[in-house]
Image (cartoon, rainbow, N blue to C red; front, side, top):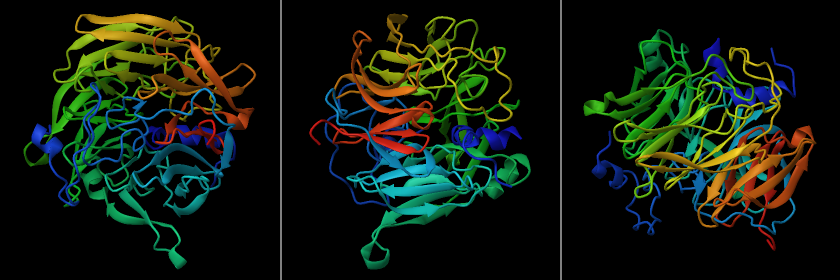
Length: 493
């Protein structure tokens, strides 16, 4: 059933190649003090164009897969730089596409085990990156593939195999003061799912995100969205559409609301009176006649990206799946008005499974067209054409109220989700050569020129499979691959 398989698409396709299968918040709500935490000092001044701090999320840059709740794919830290040290492998015996770090510095990776395909959370020492504790979660339809995030208390919010939302904490409460990971709160969703579609397991969560209203927002594989009240545990769910739609990527949050992109349309949702989920706007897009090679589903491969020159959330960007060239689509976040629909790259590379970078008035779109994934999720549909060469490509656009203008194109063969270091003024990604050599690349946002390269691995086990890297405050970059992680530190570290 497609529902069960879309949830864990990336971890599952990696594992399938390795082992056989086992038998409407108000401005006041957005800035209100947290009711369950002592008032903190005012946050430091933020650069213009930065999304406001979400009081229910961990630190910007490291608490979510895409950098912040708005999925801008930016981070506020400098990266390893041009003189980075040699890459250090961290073998975890699992595929870990989600690597996060809280204010306490501890690194938390949400992984899928090779053997039983169950989700597990290893807690990593921030200096050695060795596992100091772990928690093995219940296996089930999710198989560890859900998008997760860190909340304001450095707790990882995820879903286990039963479909319940879990809040996972860590402390030194183990024997002799050792680290441990434990379930601090559990929110069962079975009753709400039964009301929504007839049975506790009739649908499955694909993604979670912290709302600016304090709610835990989520979307499901079969095109539903909902939220959990953190204090009462009450769950609300609504269908996105009367027809079945698929949500295969993450959702994003901003003071405007929650952006969800299905395989047919992008939505902006808010919680109204009594928590009722309200649709602010819906914008359909061209989902194309079929899945393209290098994509894991038919439709947009992009998580919606909030960005803007003043507040950091004036616009929302996605990509479509049209032929012969896909398009960058930019909407006004408040109204859904289309600002631009611009084709990107050329027909041999115009398709992507990754979300764009959004920073002030700039958007960067990377191609995954033809990327040689070892397999694709069952139920994803045949690719048309069945295969294609992976040629790569990265394009920068400038966005104004009059539309979007291409500034440059690069032939960089990106094998990871690119991220912009706003402190360093450099785009970081991992490149893949035709000989399967992987290098950490620094790219100029002004010209698209590759400024430096640092080798991080070679061969099939070094494949980064379009996963997202995370840069820590000290400049260390953690990049997932087939065996765990690679650690790249700044020169001299």
